View 1 (spheres, rainbow, N blue to C red):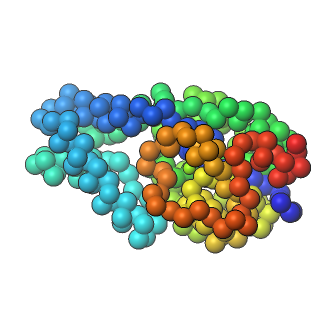
View 2 (tube, rainbow, N blue to C red):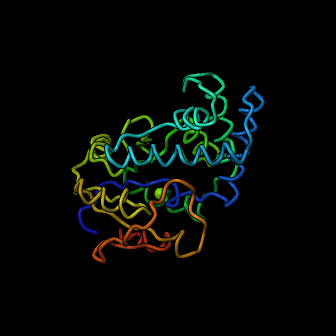
Length: 250
Ligand SMILES: [Mg+2]
């Protein structure tokens, strides 16, 4: 890659994977928390209503690029089951944190990630740009995995109000990295959010297929289904050696 002065990364399925039971466990914890706080719901009914609500909100997000939040999904699911409750109800907030405790527990770094970041950091400023609805959980995951010190810039869609592939989030990344857009390499697994988004914003994308190539169950809710692969002119990596060699750091 030519004239790179900074590197941006996606988080899930790029630097971090999630053990396969994370979503199931998260949903069990979510229902449990709501039941403890007096909502008389059956787990199966709630999970069905919740997944319908998630789909509705994601459709909206696809149209306008705006990030959503779990509290709306949960209150919508509860409304479908006859429990009218404000998304700002403290029991919903507790349920959101309980839900994400599973993701914090099951998040794992892809092997060699810290060594790769250490090498890159000697040569480039590094940014993180993650589509994640609930920023406190993203911060906790990064803290648990000791990732924070590697990044000069950390941007989470839940804070920005928009998510990748929206142009504004890439512009914020470029701004905060303090370089020109064409000087930024952006590494991510999602063909639309990461690769097409970065391309449209004028960055140089790198498509990582580590998760796909190793048959790892993707972290939930972050990979769009039925996407086509990026154009073959986009560099594709399957491991960190591939990435370092793109920057002649091998
Ligand atoms: Mg990803």
